[in-house]
Image 1 (tube, rainbow, N blue to C red):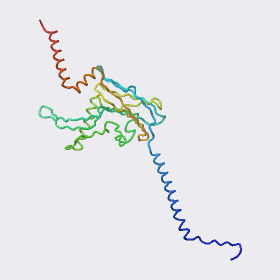
Image 2 (cartoon, rainbow, N blue to C red; image 1 turned 90 degrees about the vertical axis):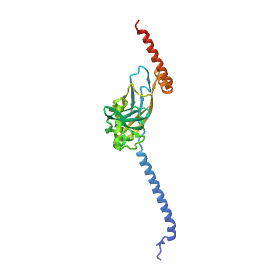
Image 3 (tube, one colour; image 1 turned 30 degrees about the vertical axis):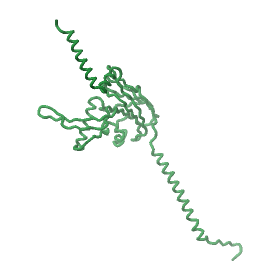
Image 4 (tube, one colour; image 1 turned 120 degrees about the vertical axis):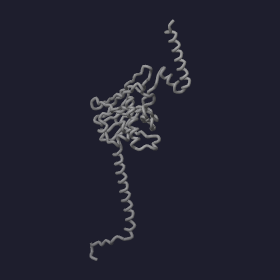
Length: 277
């Protein structure tokens, strides 16, 4: 062998066989770690932004007295500049409600069929800074029950009713509530004062039911809900109105007897005052 020339022996197959599995395991571990990091970043970027607004109500208690003829509550708040649109939903206590369909039999009308719905809001109002159809698609509106047409009105027992008949009873329920002033016929308007301040007024009619009301405020951006907040509002009977309501609800027999005695006494006094000699 000439001087100055180094000959490198080929690597031992046995040594390479011992090294390769370790390299593969290391490569796989690094690839798995990179995949997990990428998935974490994607999931974080897909999560909705927390509610970036604040709001409050001008009053959180509506007192129903003998002179109550309805009222309005002001909802106001603020959002960061160019932070999207706002929608407001106010719903009353849920109650099971029966809808009856009348049919004409000869000269009179009688109740023919009825369908009961579970958990119907006793009051429903909605307002938005843009038309609801412009805020999001039907799927998003239905998920958050934005608009009377998107309320989830579930029948208690729909046996014997077709889908078309259930939809007809559902529309009739909403129509009756709107006629009584308890449901919004048209969405109200959320007005922006400048770029950050917003406000809307919620009207409560004289026949508004007592109970705890839920106030929801949604923030929309690019057709999706990116923030939401919920608070409560109480409607309560006060004074003699509350006392009469409690007696009529919890002591109906005593309330009925008292009503009869008052009517008899009023008739006797009127007879004394206005009878002819």
